[in-house]
Image (cartoon, rainbow, N blue to C red; front, top):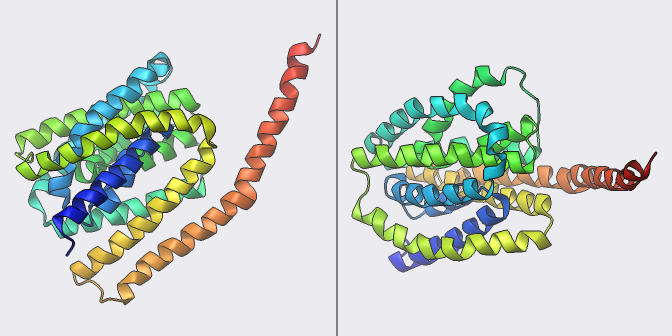
Length: 301
């Protein structure tokens, strides 16, 4: 079992990386932090600290994208309404169930979501308002149990064709609501223990350094390639975490349990190959065509 010092160093390092990614992309803090941190901590201790941090991160994201809020707020209202019952149920289960099984649920839900997002699958939904309420309930449940909601939100918003600023404004609105509501419910359930407060003190410096650094450096990086590499890191870590928790719960014996990680790595490697050989070149060609057409469009009669 790793020492406390090792856990603290890893937590500080992964939250710095996650804050950097969040500053660059507008989301990703919990989805990168949770898979690694759960190797050392339980959800019951980790979640309250992350939720408090995310209230302020999401307020920041919402503030810098406030100009796009009028364009998206009506589209996200059904999701916001659906959050509360999901958060209430998820928080209750977090306080009641065995920590090992909560970890198992977290990893099992995250892995397919990350792989679907990495695959770039899109199938626009016509009845957006109709699915908003159940989607919000499921999202609230997922967030209150895992503090992760970025992957399903990214899948939905990309699927529905939201542009960059609207994407971030929609994320900001929903995540401010879910993190604030979850923090309130956690407080009433007595989940803010001393261990959570000590974790919070470790995370704060990483966030203060990582978010502005990510926001600055993303101007020099290819955002889509950077996002895809982050997803691969996430998939591999979740695969490892799922293998570990399967062993801890005695569902499979080592080394066979690490076959779960092997499958996750194999699937992600295939998706990564498709991204760099098919999807990214096609996107660059489209960008080049649009850039070539822009001057002639403006200079036409």
